[in-house]
Amino acid sequence: MTTTDEITVEVVEHDPHDGDAVLAVLAEAFQATTEMAPIPMPLAPLPTTAMPGTPASTMPMTATPPTPATMCRARSFLTTSGAAVSVHSSPAHLSRPVDVDILGPADAVEQARALLAGVFTVQDLGWVSGEHEFETRLRLT
Image (cartoon, rainbow, N blue to C red):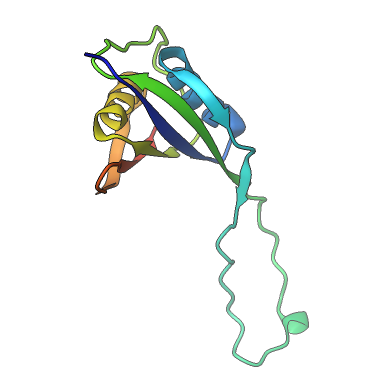
């Protein structure tokens, strides 16, 4: 018996082309249902060397190269348990590592993880198991 499950995939990217590559692999194998607008992720504040109480206007300014904005995009997909899933994509090149969170029923999350591992190098960063759902965080390179 096959069942249809929904997974939600969040992609944290520095380059939109990298996020597109990841989502395209998933869309080739699963039916996309919804996509949220990209959400800017806050960057960590730059460290300062000023002594406490030093006015910011007296701190020396140094030129730093611009950092690409980090964005988070989410999309939902329908998966079919028990169905063979494969993609015809060749291994994709990412300009920078992309972090991916996958949330849904454990079998569906594992199916998506295995699919991504067939196209990208996957590093498992952690997982959380709930009563009905499973969430995993991956780093793709």
